[in-house]
Length: 86
Image (cartoon, rainbow, N blue to C red; front, side, top):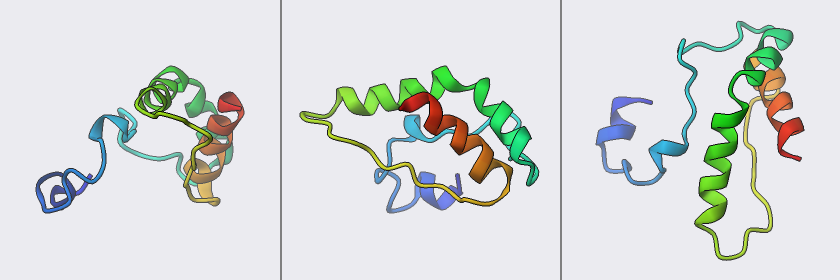
């Protein structure tokens, strides 16, 4: 995250526990297959984030997954994330 997001006026806008950044800090290098397979290694962490938000809701009816549709991270990683959440 940007320093301004962590320390600025909007620092409480998002729950920082629910923002996922890979350990290596990078994406999938515009490679769909790489992004898809990276998703396999973090399923549990992503599901924990979703569960944490769902537990805090009175009546969860759905959620929005917002991501890029191009490149490896936007398409491959998020496609895999979509598959294991439905």
